[in-house]
Image (cartoon, rainbow, N blue to C red; front, side):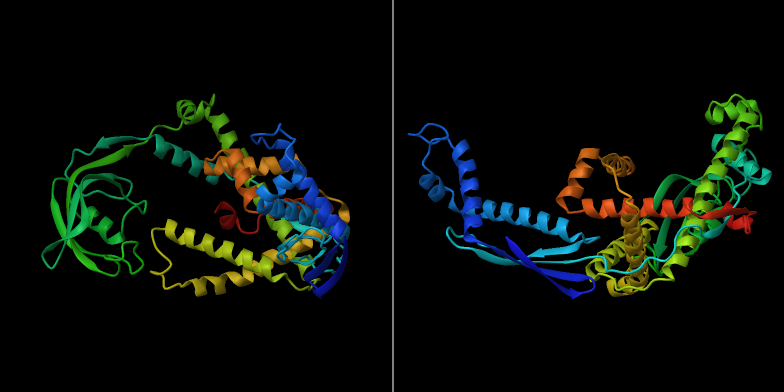
Length: 437
């Protein structure tokens, strides 16, 4: 086998491959022998069927499998020799084998371009110090009290307020006719938590226990139910019962109920540690981004179109899922696929540039991804999605996603390397409210 390399652009390469007849015949012979070895045909002992009969009986399968095997060997040999980084959009021209004849075919792909890395060791960066304030710890304890509170029926005849739980029945009408699908009996609604439309909550909060009230309720234009979106209906609500939360006292018993902590002080310590650990990760990521942004400003290189396109598709799908999880739809927000693509493109290019830069850096530093790290990644995916880890791994293998996962892990390790080589200065938190969020 011989090949010539032609760089179509800084990010695209085409390889022309010539295979002599002898190599084609050898591949056909090996594939035929494998079929012959396992073939059990009446009138012949297993493995003793004449090769000519095997070739005639399984001609299509032998030609296809021999071609695939031959190309796989060539591709692995060529790619190992060329040593391109971040391979994408690998295309191979059709190949048909014929005994006694050589073949010519082409292999094209996109890849990381050549560029010089700026100095990335010994960079200076500030990182905010992770701390937990007494006020923040108190807020968490109040949330715990709320979660452990007992609901008690309010005996006095009053309207429910934020923090209460109201048991209500409701139905809607439009021009005197019932609105399908807008009706419920004995529905338990926690007020002040954003569980219902503002107009509906206001109606409930203006209706005393045991009473019935009617008021207009407007649905937003982007409401998930398109038949109700942008419309106003007459909503009738009956408040059956009002319940209020009986908060437990802040003591050692609360700590034990919250998570088997020995004392209130142990609970406070656990909350503080959790705050500090999560913020350390956040502040470290912020410092890493500062380092990375500074490095990316110093380089400019073309991006492989296929990698950018793949990233755009992922971002668009993610954007759609996020919108749908809010109970809305992209169409209701006036966003077409073209709009979502236009919004995603700058971010996609940033992601691809970042990944290529870090992969280039990892190659220079000899940073590698281990099989254990790949397995840990698939286990995280399986745990997050509730799937079997082997099924997750098989999905990635069958859809050609193993190399992208490897490249992602390489990029993460390269970023950690830059951070460990940097001169990090701890500074006080600049925006406490942002840190709390």
